[in-house]
Image 1 (cartoon, one colour):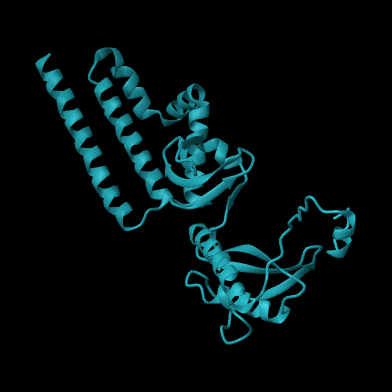
Image 2: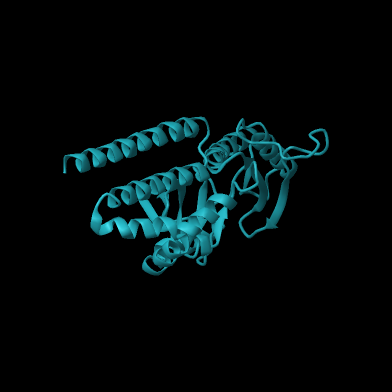
Length: 279
């Protein structure tokens, strides 16, 4: 009995040492560059090490020794047992392998799974699940088999920048050419905006088009290109503020709907002021 306990203790020590070594090795790798396939490989390594330790311990007992020997010598039987008893688990593991190999997304990237109604940042991938942190700072634990079948929108996939449309209205009384130039210069000079031209010497870094001659004013449209979504949100917010400031500086007005309220005036006074009852 004492020898049996010593053997179990040795196996547990080796298992603990293996776990510690895996955490250290993969921790050093992940510090240099976080990749989703590395996290998945770490989880798989821990599972394999735990299974080996369990089989070794079960082989120490007479009641389970024959079963352990059979499982170790018959890989086809092991696959059949695992496949029958844990079909969904196996599907999640295989899907995790496929996701880790194909890498449709990586750690830290923002994804949108429209079929599931989930948007957020990829935070982790385990043997069975992919963890996505939503913009409300909650975690969505999605089985790998589910996410492997879903359509995933990833703006960073094989792409070094992301674009977002920006529309600004100017009044018909304003100088249109000057408004276009001010908007172009404001966007182009912002530090987070990137130049996507193949040849920087050709054309403009930022193009501004007249989208529509609307009922309330002339709508100008451009695209703000940045490296990622966070930069794009910040850039668009600041650029809108700067456009308003620069428009005011040169006398370009942004139209807006407003209502004239007149009280205690006769019909004759209203006509003298150029205001009709319909207005």
